[in-house]
Length: 357
Ligand SMILES: Nc1ncnc2c1ncn2[C@@H]1O[C@H](COP(=O)(O)OP(=O)(O)O)[C@@H](O)[C@H]1O
Ligand SMILES: [Mg+2]
Image (cartoon, rainbow, N blue to C red; front, side, top):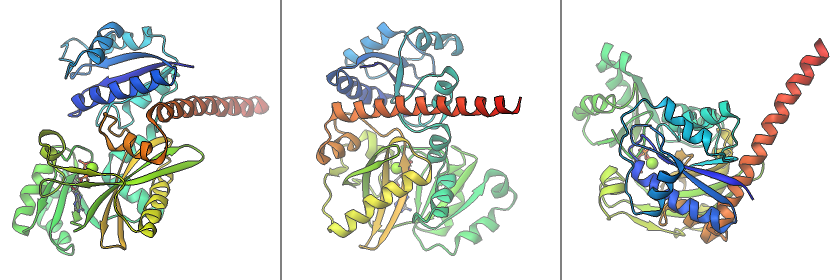
């Protein structure tokens, strides 16, 4: 059994969700027999020590307030913890996007979930869509622009979008929690929606709006990737926006989703294909849009999915026959396997160089 650091909180808008996810993950790991050290990150990026982190997990604390000191020296709390493997449950920017994974690589610490490149690609909607499309995974038709190009000639971009049927979804390429996303039903609103999205990222994409269902599938594995049963989100608002995700209690979550077997089989195969296409390892929740019975599109992959007691990812695995302790234990085993493999690759490089000497 391993000494696992559960890293939670962080700088993203999903700070509070992350704390709730960490409670579930810590409990599952303990039930699986691991020893757990929670490691919290305040909303300004500063790390807090293991005792303070445990107090956040054990109490009903909703957030870790900013410490307002330089961040770098506070990383000592991770270094001093003595953990053998890290389970980051940091949703969104500064955690799900490859940044935390890079820190672990530099520290030679095994970590749960996707690596640096995969995490970064999955967080960037334009990059992810290009990579998925190149691998034959169906994605929704889109156009993209950068701040520089849009400011130089907004009309040219708006003209390019005219081929896409209304309504349109305008999104910052890097982001999450639906922040910065607008549904546009009239082209006169497009320029403002693009400028709004540009407040959150340098690159914006405009997608054709899919009139259909939102389905989710949980994937798990490394060499051998498995897909769970399928779940469905029924937005309470016009789409699954920030308020619907976090402020209201109007969205419905149905699991397993009612679907013809052929559709759910196809969806599960496509989820594994999408995960593999971006080099996934460990886990991800793959989100789909389904138009009719044939129009299946991967909307996005979430490489550090929500893990609260009511989140879709652990629920879908439970329904597939993998309860929480076995699920989180498997994730830790994959993290250790991948770390050992990375070491072997390094050895291989050294041996190769030795043959040249
Ligand atoms: N092309 C689309 N067609 C229909 N609905 C969409 C489309 N793109 C996004 N949405 C709606 O907006 C929500 C958030 O978009 P998404 O791309 O998942 O961004 P985020 O990363 O912020 O979750 C989706 O859950 C869905 O309700
Ligand atoms: Mg989403």
